[in-house]
Length: 228
Image (cartoon, rainbow, N blue to C red; front, side):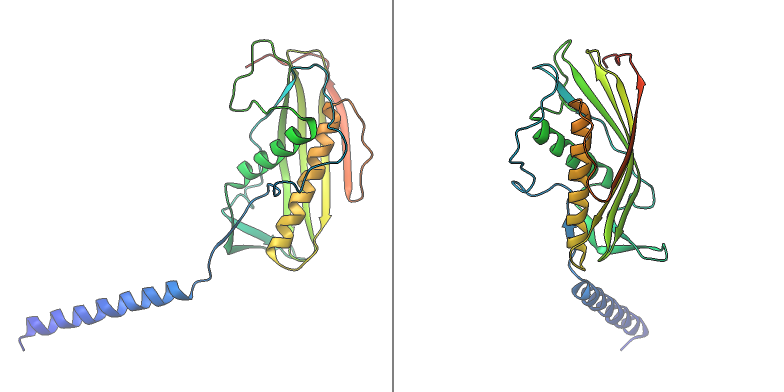
């Protein structure tokens, strides 16, 4: 066999070894699971009548939700007791975390208030709108222990006379279970609680805070917001 043929044979052997190694690595990787913060259909329905907003035509507009950079990752980020954050590469969000939060909040508000979210659909001219802006400053997933959400949020009235409201809310929801799915379920419940508090403020109420929740609210303006 010539030297050239020997070199080609060696290249072929090493290429084949590389392909086999790659296939073996892929075969050994755990499957990826995707999770959402939106609750399953029917799980968030209330037996009580929906809260009512002032005005028959009032709708809501939930703006994009900001999240901390540390957890704004495709992977679910777990925090331990020492404060270290670890990515779970085989457990991921179905959409960017900010989108998951906005969708879950919108879903809860529209169900609780029985209104439409006009974030992507322009409301009718002069239609009353409650605009919701939320900044999540803490989104902790402590495996087997708790889901913690801390957020500052603002309500502004568009095309109607109503005071603007600025609130800071902290929700801690205990986790029932020791796996990632249990932690996601706890976050869903925490967001349900947060959504209910926002809805109550829109409806003019001052709700009693459930266990694990702290909240401070203040009126920041009596002037209505201008339409987009």
